[in-house]
Length: 63
Image (cartoon, rainbow, N blue to C red; front, top):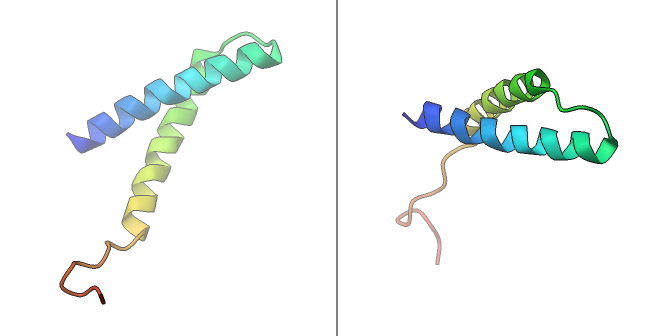
């Protein structure tokens, strides 16, 4: 379920960014470009979460 929600929110946010940037530049909005970028961003998010180690627990932390 987390994969679905990650893709869902990434898709919406990337589409919004694509729309805003394309209107600021003055080019027509392209849904396909936003879709490809959202898939790439989702894959990148999953790769980053695999690379970053989990934080230390409170037992291991120095006070």
